[in-house]
Image (cartoon, rainbow, N blue to C red; front, side):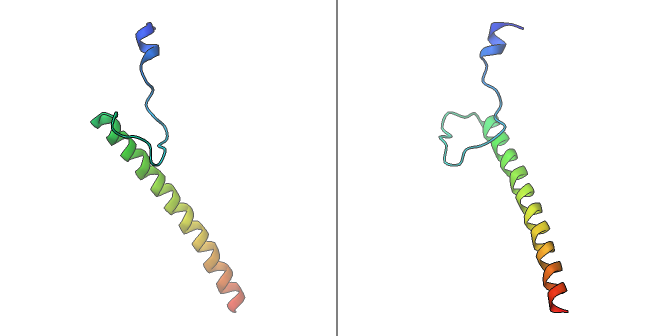
Length: 63
């Protein structure tokens, strides 16, 4: 491993909302979009799980 490899910035695994995007390359922006799409899918899946639990509870107490 060379020193150059150690100094290269690592690809982000997260995205901070509102951060400065002006210094990011097109590839880095695409990567961030991908990360955000994955996070949206994860949040939507959790939302659906909670909604299903609520529907089950509502149907139990309405009987």
